[in-house]
Image (tube, rainbow, N blue to C red):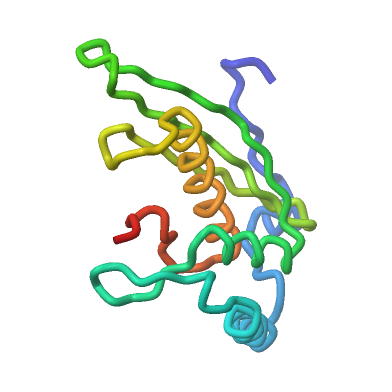
Amino acid sequence: MTEKQLAKRPETAEAVQDLVLIPVASPDDLVAAMRNYQVIMHRLLDRGDYYQVGDGQPRIRKSGWRKLALAFGLSDEILSEKRLVYASDPTHVVYQITVRVWSRSGRSVQAVGSADSKEREYAHLEHDLRALAHTRAKSRAIADILGSAELVAEEIGEE
């Protein structure tokens, strides 16, 4: 198909049916799977996989997201990495990393994580910025592919 051609419209009812979004399981099975996910989270994650921020809500940290990725057979890869320096202030550096996480079914999610040299003090600036951007991107992608509403702890920052 060239740039100027339009996609062809399905001509049969069967072809249209292939385009309809259909749940992967029955409502009962989906509810059971979500309950199972919550049980796995409760039993798999321990106190060290959480920390609390100013609002008192526990947030899952890096170790917790990695455990969940392992439990659900998720894989990941870094798709891109950028180091940005502000022309007006060469000491102001931002790392931006894009990660893709995929499941055994082939479903995948991409997420971006950034870390800014001005958001806090870093012991090893370049390493810490890159590592934090990667952690944020990967944790976001894992949370997203699992359908989790949990906030990624590293997004908020530890006290």
